[in-house]
Amino acid sequence: MLDLIAPASASAWHALADPWAQAIVRRAFLEIGLIGLLGGPLGCWIVFYGLSYSAESLAHGLFPGLVVAALTGIPLVIGGAAGLVVAALGIAIAGRVPTIGRDAAVAIVITTLFGLGALLALSPASPPGIQGLLFGDVLGVSDGDLVFAAAAAAVTAVSLWALQRALLAVGFDRGSAPSLGISPLLVDAALLVLLALAILVTVQGLGNLLALAMLVAPGATAALLVKRFGPMLWLAAALAIAAGFGGLYASYYLNTAAGASIAAATVVLYAGAAGGSWIVRSVRSRRGLGGPVGARSPEYARMP
Amino acid sequence: MAEAVLVECRGLAVGYNGRPALRDVTFNADTGERIGVLGPNGGGKTTLFRALGGELEPMSGDVKVLSRCATVPQTERSRLDYPVSALDVTLMGTIPLRGWWRHPRRSERASAREALAAVGLDGLESRTFGELSGGQRQRVLVARALVQDARVLLLDEPFSGMDVASAQRLSELIDRLAGEGRAVLVATHDVEQARRWDRVLCLNRRQIAFGPPDEVLTMQVLEATHGGTIVELQEDGEHVAVMPAHHHHEGGGGHA
Image (tube, rainbow over all chains, first blue to last red; front, top):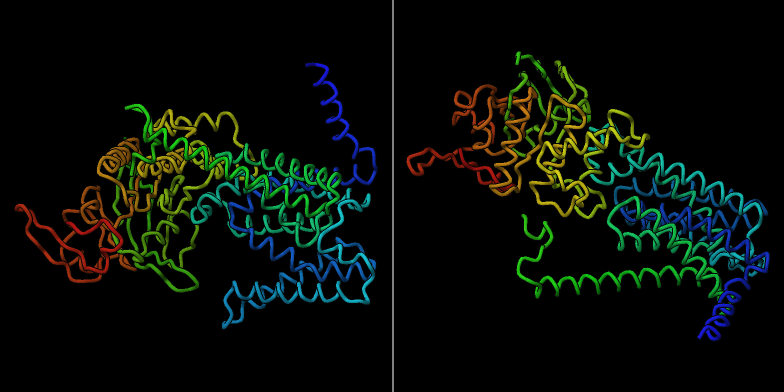
């Protein structure tokens, strides 16, 4: 038996270790690990603050900034940041037009900006490779990208740690937060700044269209599995890193696009967690219906 | 226990965007006193609480709160799908004492557990807030106010949507908190509830009346407070006042 297990485990180990022999893949693992550390925990707050649509909009809105940066040779981070400012200003101005609703204003501005970026990126005059901004190029990250991702992950971790009580209180009951000495407006602003930073980092690795996968799916998956914020934040980071690494391995062995493979892995994890929790609920519900007399039912099921 | 004034309002006017939502408010609340704040929805009850809590500046008049003040909001405003335990929610009450950026210390956790025990929820500290009953959730929010070491408690419609047994427990808790020397202000639009407290403050965008319920809750005052004609009925030998129909959709209220 051992004769069979030993070669199998050795070949599995080789399969896991092989990609790490290449420097560009090692850098990709590091970049994705940092994005997971940053995006997973932040994603929990994005999900519970209902900011997933805002995150999607911001990611698309900064696209022209990225394209202009790539065309002119300035760092993508600077172009992306400028794109974010333009998108935020555009939404703020369009939102004030009385005949346009706030939702419609966001949709109009973001679609316009994204279309503008796509027009520039897909123009025959644009240099080859610029289309990579749409889907990312995690295998082509530079040392500067890694340093920026590490700094952003550190800033996000410290900020979330410091803001945790305020975020918790405002998300729980926005109306009574001022009576606890917390301004919901400032907490929202801080969360949006962290979200913008996370988008800038994630877009570099996964591209404009797929960045949201790492910022929303791991947090949403963790929220399905645990009922307390503390463990949820850690689980979301672990899930994001697992999905990122899983996607990279899939990309390496199946010869698929890295960004798309990572995004698919986050969706697979979410679908697995959703299916698993549905099965657990169904089994519990059946046991509850057919269970022994006196079996405990949840407090909220018995109380008004 | 020596009686002392904890809250004092003189000619208070308060509102939003330069427009008064409530005016002519003159009352005081003393130690050990339970005050019902009666009024329709939009009558200024929450606005008064926000002024007492320091969230709104008076537009004119004076408001003095001579001790720490804590608000107990309606549980309907809290998210039930939120991943926090009863202890987590209670610990939010320590934020005004130490700042939002500091994580709770062991001593604060101990005082939060004591507060939960004081409201009869010992053993349920780790229960998710959304899994608790309506009455238990309201008591968690009272515990959150207690860890603030507040001697003035402002309860915003605490009996709303509560069953009789839970309401009875909460009522006893309010009596006990007042008995310990706190001033407890209870906002309600239910006249019958207002009758149970020591004094009643009737509001309808201005102060209509203030005093002991037997003296204050006349048909004339109730009509002015609820902004409509009160129908008086007889039920089992007792007088029953029926509120104007447009307030009934909010639930509760209706008897006097």
